[in-house]
Length: 448
Image (cartoon, rainbow, N blue to C red; front, side, top):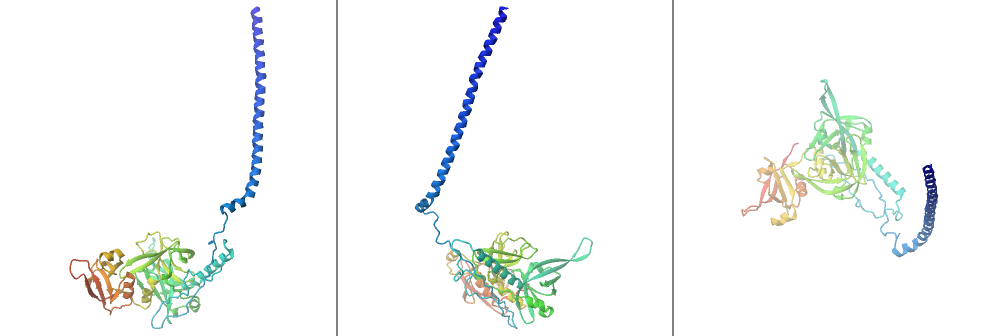
């Protein structure tokens, strides 16, 4: 019994101790919670006070600080100018006896900014921008009057054994006319395998064309269309393409691209010349090429015009193998005018069978010559080969004219005919005494 009493007292003592501990713990938690709340409240209040005071400090000291450090000053060259675009067309027609492709002269360089409207300094004028876009759109619309669709129709046998027409469309450019004919320039590779060629006007009228002249090296062809076969409405709606001077092209020059850049539909793109100094060497000629930022694919065809609507380039994929294939390149129109004129008049290029390249200055100095071009190839059984010209020779002069580049050599050749005799001075790096000598070359007509 005594043990039970002792156990009961011990239990009561334990409960009493637990009660005292609990009473001591609860106030401690409450005190801690209140302390945390007070710290948070003080921090929030301090943040609000510092934020408001900082706002006033930065606001009213901004002008003082900007003045000290020279901030927010207007840059002297920040003014911008708009480009005024003038569309020019030529009304001249070729001579009745000989077809001429007219190149339009410009009164001032395309990048001349004198007399242009000054836009408010540091701002872009929306009205000026709209006017520029409208002018460019009008320019493109006028240019398209000198363009025409060409359908190359080929007879193919389908899987049922039936012969059907397969049509591939490409672009044509109306480059010249005479009293009786209209002459249309196009891509040779697009039409060379066709069984039938049709030109299609905006009216939907289509005409079969049978006369075709071409130059495979330049990848161009000329269609000759009798005017008598055309309806008067179509004659009235077309225009001769205004031909510019591609010597005026420069990197950064704004241009307009018109054509089928996706290989299907006619499109218009505004862009820039990205480079203007590429050269592709072909037999008896050099082709000058420039590049643009216009996006193309393998089937792209089209033209490049300047802001005055003058043709300065033909988009190409076949010429320019030295340039990366995915670069958008165009042939400078100056390289094509003489060749196209020859084709319009039923002729073909003069041929001597030389492939040559321009010579860097160090190579000239190394061979102790002042000027010349390097012969990189001679075609077998050609007039050049028959005259004794070899690969590795340097052409110093032709008909007494010093040859400084392949372009000059090509121009002299273009002015010759099959009845001419070309006196060519050569330099041959050899141990023989006669390193400089002359040969006579009889050029021929190369019938493609």
